[in-house]
Length: 171
Length: 155
Image 1 (cartoon, rainbow over the protein chains, first blue to last red):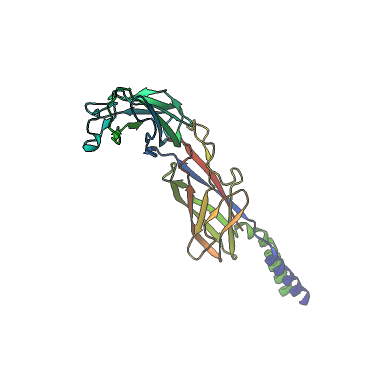
Image 2: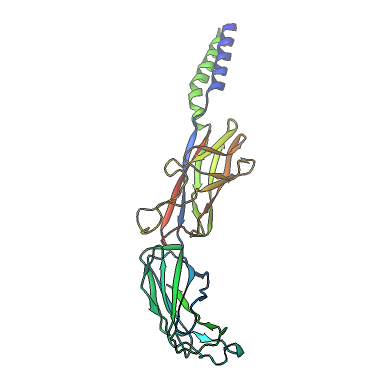
């Protein structure tokens, strides 16, 4: 009887020592890219030198573009009604005697990583492609290099401010 | 003598029964997979899946790893032209459940990382809450699917 009891105890101990095997399972995590089309204006260009009769003023502006589409096109237009493409003098005494708008249109050329520039374009009231991309772009910083040729005969009062709003469209 | 035979029979029955017990001692099954949204540059995409854990013989520990991509979601072979091959940041997961001790948010990588543990249970449903930070500069084509297989191990 005592021999049987000893065997039984030994069996119980063996049961307790048996480790259960680990179990594994795979969980699939998926994300599908949603469409994003974004264009944000960064640094505004400001002509600080040579903005005077007979001078050629240059300045750069920046934009940040994101487009998850397979290709992109960036176009520019000046929506001014009567003087599209040309910088206009501010109203008021600071521009008394100045030409209301510059003789020559403003030009711009857009460059950036991952995009192909379309070269220098003369701004007008018609949309013009300034850059393209043949692949998705994300947070690409684009530089718009502006140039303004001012004839020697241009009438400009010292301190007179000329402006133009270039509207860019990313598609 | 008859008592001795009976006890021996019980002992034999016990020994025979022992090998069958561990096979059902731990159980881990996937209930639902996870889909992340909003999945696009500059966003933190989130999504949840569920698991069921059964450990009727004692406490348990749950670990996760990605032995293929080391925690980085990878793009599909098709429909992803121009997209980054894999995301810049690792996927993170937080596992929670009733009566479960969560290890908090963990970045998934190529080694097993504990995400939760708990006491004896017949069946507990766990939620796997994933988060994927996507930088604004991540290049991704609309419709491109990124995936990761999270392997959970229950011990």
